[in-house]
Image (cartoon, rainbow, N blue to C red; front, side):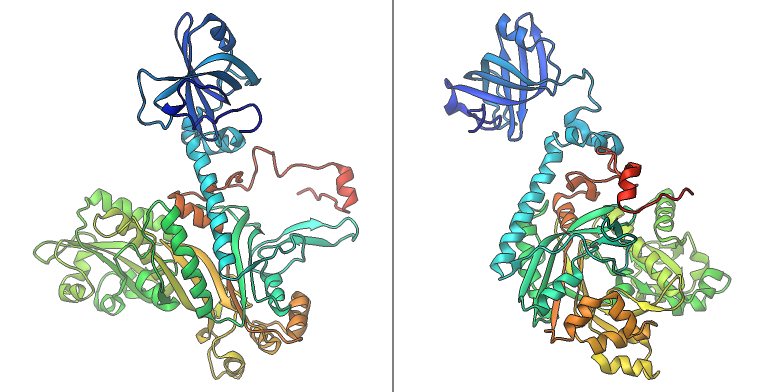
Length: 590
């Protein structure tokens, strides 16, 4: 060992009995049981070791030393009389001959008990993250993250990919989220942007002749937080392949990811190649989401035609689309059903309805009176005696979304419908190229403007002439989904400047706009770009799934809170007037 240690706190075993050793670590606990008798627990990165004080000199050395101080203990390894089979070092203890305080903890009271830090308020944990990370359970997630990243690098290298880093200071680019801007000192009034992703750079690498690129890439987006998204920054396994198709990308991901999930995951079962492929429209119709959790066996049915036959219930009569999620064996009380429906309404933004079919096949509860006489049609939609159905009505998108949320909640709440202990992967393919923007009401790119449209230039020209509805154009674009979490988006890229310009013209932007917004990419494509494709699975989300965590902040060493604040470093923070002057910035008061 290096420094002042001969061994770590997780290393000593019975064969070490009789050795004189030196351990260093944090004083996790001290329990005095007599005038000159105490038990100490010493903890380092590797584990814990019990230290037994039996002399007045050693007792004096630990008197007044606060927990979480760092200490060095030199002593003799003894066999424990009362062994602890739950600890790797539970058969031995160290009787000290010297105890030295290396770093004193100056506080009698800690913000939280280290081994119970996960139960503390999240903002307190983040403010004292250096203490929170001392908790072995918290530290384990960071160790897992390191192992997974190392394994990703190894496997990508074995697949022939070259790791190349791309710039952090770059130009602002309209890629779907808000940029983090960095003012330029040398160029007044101009700004760098932190990259939302290395998208353009990796495509430029393809045009430069690099065949297979990857990096564990930091990405920066000024977005609000949620359970599976950290505000500010995140990391992704970014990769791109020249002369590649969608199938080439799928082949690489299906080789790289399943062994890692099976090896490091909370469950050792992961989908094997080929992953199931689901068209976007089918995913929305059958699962109510483009991020389906395939561990749940429930599906969404369309009862729009049946709803139109009902009378006296306006939500059914007026809805453009009505979806149903039947669930067998749902022995839920009325109170539980109401609570489930309330939760669906909160998440989906629209109230769902419900109905039961009793063991005799009659409809009871909820909207039963409006569906009476249609029992056989409901059976054709999947209802069986003893089942419960959640129904969603509205326009197409809202009805599908509500049904999708209901499917997930029913699958979680009702036993027998979710095979939880596995990693179920799928590809969502054939995304629409365009959509009508909710705010603008105009035609916009649905996801990635760099995607190659299925049908190429010909289909875009037909759309321009009115022969094809732009909403019916699909992109060679795909998402990788695992257990209901979107791990990644990817696409076969649009490498032809003529096709790129035509695609942008459909959303109201001309060649001049393309050249202005993406000058390097447009220029590079004019010098002979190879067909290329790529993807970028999120490392943080990946580790979150592997660790079985609900929040992505549990797997990030120093995360921000939900308001994009680093409470430990007090960021964002004010700067001096001199700093502002140097970058030509003046603060405008609200």
